[in-house]
Image (cartoon, rainbow over all chains, first blue to last red; front, side, top):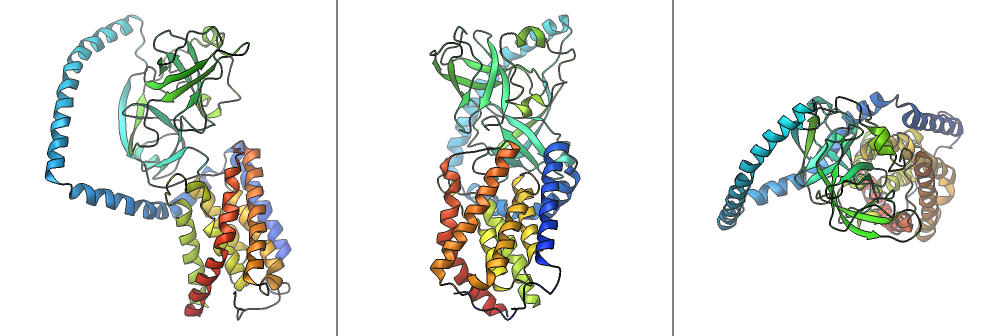
Length: 308
Length: 156
């Protein structure tokens, strides 16, 4: 039971009248929402509040980080040895491939120079950890431990070791919020590695599924096709893996039902890379490409935001 | 008095922490709004100390913490706080089960408001899962009261 408090003064008559207070605060809330949604004027208020809230986020993150650290410190020797052997083997293999890659890269650069186009090669990366904080069960957002102080900017591309992860949606002083490519509000322009078909991959709210709603029935896409980023819109660097086509169903009259599985480990990644790259110098050949895919302007505000 | 005030702010912080602690995937949608429950409890027991400003601020901090539209949870907390204030004299007389029912209605209203604002700002998620916290919150209410009672008795 709730006990009767020692404080049982009448509701009305002491302090500010309750209803007037309520209406004032409600009006402020609505004003804040409108300002936040429409005019993006109050980023400074959010920034100030996020400074107050930062210790809370750190406090939530701390025990998880500490357990990680402890388990790592006390990992037994044989496991570490095993891991080391595996990594050495993998490194040897990677080095071998890299030798070939160096030649290819050189060749690629020469070709690109001929076309006077050196766009889209990541020239600076920053490793960021994902804070162990749950933002919203129904939206795919994560919080990184790098913010404006580290040079992070809005709409910056975020990658993990396996592909494109998402893009920065909000920048605070010491943290940044990232929207994953699987968020239902996210869309990313992609191109099939095999056939060159360009389209848009839209998040579904399921971390293992992207949907490609603007693929016509005749398009040349097959399960297993790797989808790479095209770099259109200037947000993501071109040529990085985004997803692998998992299902193509050619029913209906105009659009095929196509699904793809993100290559990045969206649900497991602990560390991600923030990428700086030189955006395409000349405007993307949008007119020619837009013909094959309907414009997703209404479906994809974040992915389109960075268009220059 | 000072101890009580401190208790309110500490429980607000605790509620906010529990709102963002990572939970296993299946448990995540069920997460009860402990910050909101704590707010209702304090508005019920001592409405003059924990007033509308307290409710509004809790909501605002939750907005920032979750990266939502600024003012969304603030408005939700404010509306629930105001109604609790209005119902306070009656609700304090109710047996615990009846109280839990009223709390469930308040939580339902709160989540309807959140759902509505989500829709307006284009974040709409329409699955039935999003209404689970209403149920889990109502079920937790007796526990919140028990915990709150023991804490306030110690502090005053």
